[in-house]
Image 1 (cartoon, helix red, strand yellow):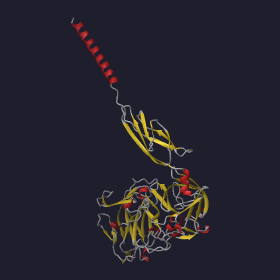
Image 2 (cartoon, rainbow, N blue to C red; image 1 turned 90 degrees about the vertical axis):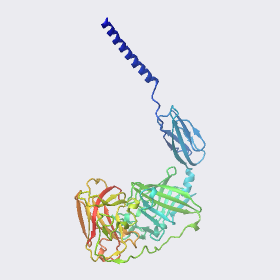
Image 3 (cartoon, rainbow, N blue to C red; image 1 turned 60 degrees about the vertical axis):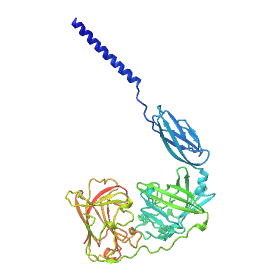
Image 4 (cartoon, rainbow, N blue to C red; image 1 turned 180 degrees about the horizontal axis):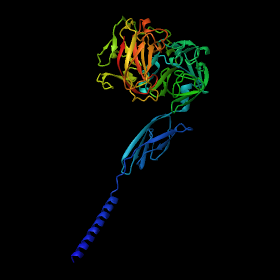
Length: 501
């Protein structure tokens, strides 16, 4: 009897367990997971045959219904609609995506609808339209990005490059692009450094158009080419060997010191009272060039070209020091070479070229503090603007201790190069056109190494072979460059004991 009771008890427990599992399973089926929150997203494409027609492709997720507001008073609930706007204009299109629980998400995009004929007329006029560099304020320059355009260098109508303000760039309704150099050309350093035509206006004849590598670049002179204009993307493409705007070497994706078969750039045109402005831009990795051109419907508004450049800066008082150094141990560990006087041109810590910190821990672990040099952009010198014209009577060498970390990535454009630069900046607006430079290449990594240079033996720079510091009485600018110039690859270095002896 007892065994029979135990047997039935076990069966009841098993049966109860089965009932529990069934009940739990039933509850789970009756209580499904809530729907996921929606994510709204879309892309759009303008029609190639009807500029007012736009196709919207819906990429929303976890949604069951859609509401479109096209910004022109029209709406739609179609998943991926095709919408025709009534007229050109700028519209903010908003998509609201909802899930089954009525939870919503929104996504918006601004669409600029342009009449291609009107846009082309704004660029090329009724038959043609001629553009020249804008002569008010800055007209051309370079910076790290559009938000900081022309922060590294800006050209103004001050007489520094008068020839470029006479150049004419004409677009015609027959889709021709005509450049007229007006008989003169500017020797851009990137192209003509080391030649007689570097950084001067010279006669625009083929014999003068030889770049620093000895290559003929006369295709950049006056000529007729073709162009294409895509107003929906604000893109101009010049076609024809040597066609250019902005600077001759600016190309579609990179700079080139030889003529190219074509080049594309962005162009935004604004209508002003009595004139129009066109700003073109070239965007590379960490480098943003742009230039502004003007076309005057009222010629009386066009300023004259300044042909004579007024003197720049001032002549500093002379100083013949017996000491000149900075250890970078602390902000006050220096004689004359004060980093607080960093030259405010391209490469200073304030404009993204580099960052420099004094008094950081010794990377070798010795315990002596030093300076930390972080490259952040194309122009990266640690620069010192002196308060005096330095007389070098008591100095024959310059030296710098460098710690070159192996942890930097040297497989790209970052190099192990070390350079000390000496130049004149108080009376020269562009010191890089006349400096001398002392160069070395690090071969020892992760150790402090002292690099010493003979002041009478500069190895590079426009002034090498022309002068030495001892033969000049107006030099007031020094710089340290690590990692090589002309690129945006980042790197961290350490320096100490920058010293003239």
